[in-house]
Length: 350
Ligand SMILES: C[S@@+](CC[C@H](N)C(=O)[O-])C[C@H]1O[C@@H](n2cnc3c(N)ncnc32)[C@H](O)[C@@H]1O
Image (tube, rainbow, N blue to C red; front, side):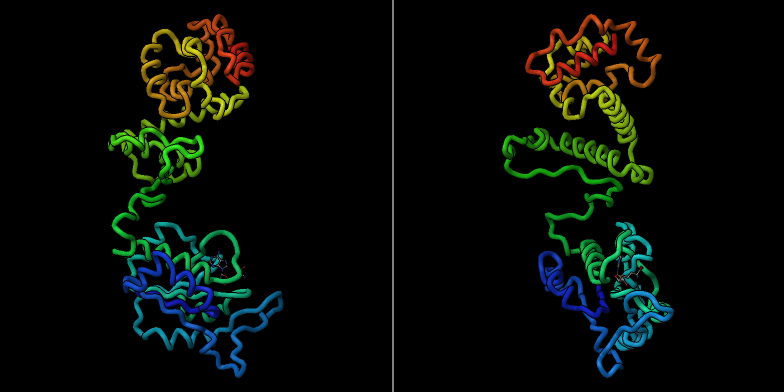
């Protein structure tokens, strides 16, 4: 991949291009980045490259002449690569766009500065405007570095064998699962057990579930186009339900954090929350295999506990079946920080 960058400030890019993965890829010849100083092509006797905007207004505009001449001097007439102007007005850069750019053999990036670039230069030498996000930078150099970095990762050989671009956020269509490294216990915060054992299938399943959960929480719109299996969809239904449950709990003054401490709750709560018919299975699944944030959460998310927060009629049906009022927080452990809120929760269910 050969990339040419046209800029007034080549020194802004050099440090990034000389370090870490990009630096190694450039030294190894896997990518070639050429920095072209637009100022060198200015016909002005003081090498000026900008001027006041016609029509008035704040700031300066980069003039067309140095840019058009710099392009003419550095790109052959039959240049096939894409010529991109970094601009907040452009198409927003996403991983899909990065993949598209990575398929090019050559790429040219124009960095604007000040108030931007004379439109006639853009009309003459640019194929497309690209934005790195909905905010305004002082110049296009950081944007160019973002494009170079993201595109280079997809060039074969740039990432080492132990680094992969396939299992990343967006590439899979989802956000990535949380990562952990040694020590297994960092100042009392433990890495999830499943990652410490050698059960590969368990690890894959845990990561997929965490990925789906994070995407659902933070970027639900990604799920509309992500490639999902039937098992993913089933899991998502559960996770959505768990979110509704969390919302229901939070309306009762119980947080997700509180639900984590639900592991400390006494067995009575199992009988308080889970109807008789489901208790055995729930105990097996939730008490021993609490994979998330406590058996109570697990019990809800797995559907062992009826959907009493989904509607008043469901709530009534469950209450009639399970005399929750007869099983209040009286049996709750004194250690439970929740006993007060739980007591009021029970009262509301009577
Ligand atoms: C201060 S900005 C000019 C903004 C311009 N006056 C506007 O309102 O659209 C100067 C230069 O920074 C670069 N730039 C600023 N924000 C950017 C973004 N979000 N994505 C890519 N490039 C950006 C562009 O090259 C632009 O010419």
